[in-house]
Image (cartoon, rainbow, N blue to C red; front, side, top):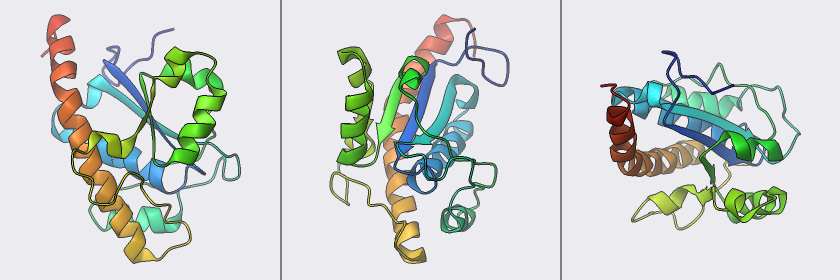
Length: 179
């Protein structure tokens, strides 16, 4: 069964953000990229999800500090429920985006093929000049200031990710006769 976007059309790209527990960084990125895509008129062309490498928080809401950091910039993470990435998910996504090397290492271990490993990319790899280095820090043990800083790093990287994806998505959409 094909994956369907809200309007019934098959999405052009399927993206899954993966952090450790799926309660801080990955739900932040999911909400932010979805909002940015909607603002650019690409919401129906992208299927955006998130997951964690660990199972500790499965079924829980995003961390309250994550929800608060999103709310401070007019976004809501209230609908989120944590889930664990399953190796079968590699077949469901075109991009699997991580935040640090531990997640990449785990996902590369779970991948059965080189093609699956090739789906895994660091989020900051899409930012041509990442101010925070090569990894997005885990804010879990931090304060509101760190959550806001992480949110801003994620937003900047998601903007650059979408800048790179938008021409591909629009070309694919146009080739299918949609505007």
